[in-house]
Length: 176
Image (cartoon, rainbow, N blue to C red; front, side):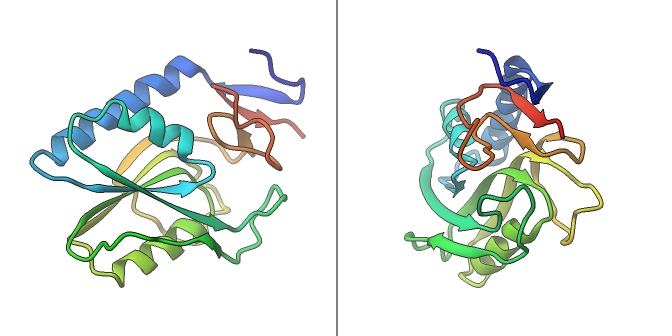
């Protein structure tokens, strides 16, 4: 599959697949004898979550929330909006948040604070990509991490720019 010329390859499909498999193995190990709720942040993490749950050997439930802080921009507005909220009861549950990318930290920090107030038994974060650049505004502890990537705007593997490029199986950065 070819990408437009302004996209430069950052991670191959195989590199991503290997990390998703490693993350699934760690989650399988840590959640033995448990039945966690996996909470995916839409839209970007749906591809990652789908690939991840197919590799899990533990019973899981899934839930989705949709938050927005980018709109159609390449940079966050700094204001998080709930587009589709939590529907499941999480009090006393083991909750694992599945996120595609942690960038400034605003969105995931907002969600984790919201979830903590609902008193889950445990709350952890699994992120495929971490971009801990000077753009990071909020300190975020990532319990399960796939890749640390450079401070570039990335697309592919579920991540988009104005709803484009989600379908690409690799991770690209947009060259300015």
